[in-house]
Amino acid sequence: MHLQKQTIKELLLKRDFEQIIFLCNKNVRAFKFLRSCLYDVDSRIYWPAIEAIAKLMQVWWQENKKEKVREFIRNLFWSMNDESGGIGWNAPQTVAEIIIHIPQLLEPYGSMMVAHAFEEPPLVKGGLWGIGRLGERIKDSVSFFQNEIFSQVLKINEPETLGLFAWAMGKVSFKPALPYLKDLLQRTEEVAIYIDGKFYKKPLGKWASEAIKKIKGK
Image (cartoon, rainbow, N blue to C red; front, top):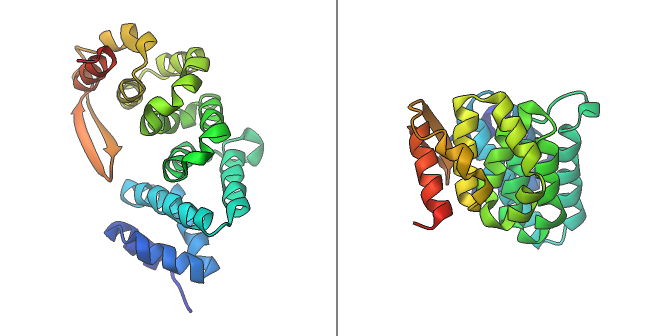
């Protein structure tokens, strides 16, 4: 079967996850192409690639290919490491999405995702998205690493990072974030966040106010 990377990209654009999983199970090249799409510059490609990989890992887990899944996750963590020779763009999001599909993997991989993402500035946005995606199930890890999280976010201090921070802290209902969120209420920069297969765009202050309401239980 002659398979082109473009075929996988077209299926990702259509969000045809069933066909992608079928191809990956039939053709090693398909999985190779899918993994490479994690590093695509086009968000319309790499976000559905994250989702497709997580769904594929779930299928493998159910087929008792558990070591294969763990090996893939270990490779994601390796890609986040300086020693790998490159930064694993979208690795934190992929780990989080896999955990959503295979909840048994929350420990130890959830806390490991947080620990790795906030060691490397280029991974901070991915780490924040991963925290938001996992929500309150990752609260203990957020609490443990809160100094690293707050420090990196304040150091980067740009709208998209702050918007992801606000959304993530709201999803976790993380009260220590309230003073930082209140400082964002007057910010008007537009921030888009990928949630449940779609981009949602709001002013930074709106993300902050929604997070505050969630944390305060209003």
